[in-house]
Image (cartoon, rainbow, N blue to C red; front, side, top):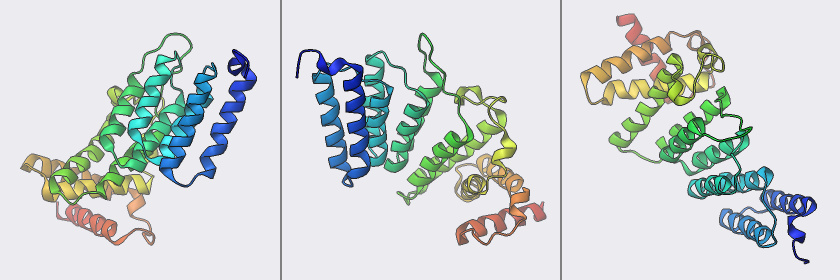
Length: 253
């Protein structure tokens, strides 16, 4: 290797292609991360300056491995190198929390994304419906890891808060009427079932009467949506039970 040879555009492209080739070939998560970061460190040692494609390849490896901590480290490295994360960067980082089933990390990355400030031509992260579904899926995934009522209540509150923030287009969550349409979510059966089940659970296990009544009211609103008046052949038994309970509440009002 000649001095500075690693910093040429051709070398950067070569290293990036090598990173991208490693990702689909390695099935062992730990080996995948180790190999990808070895190539990345070799690239740095050769004098090459990583670009977005390089960093996003690292984040993709973190997502596939479910290493959310490493994904956060990569985001920080990007900033240290003067690169602002782009849309793909944020999504891959969020995907790492989904695999890891870590909602705290997901919320931290989300907050970082919507509040990120950078100079120059940085394009702000404006959440799309797919990003919001991804965040919800992290909460739902973590629910499968615990049977503790306290922990499940906390996760259900996050699910319900996400829905309420959507309805109100809460700017603190990065939501705006220009990019978010609540009716689009209310036609999304997967999304609304997750919210409905959270509300029904909080109606039974909420810590206060106000919380239980509030959860019940939201559950009734959701159970009355057109998507729950259609055939529910593909809905699991627990979800059908939640729908039936909420619809019975409507009739008893």
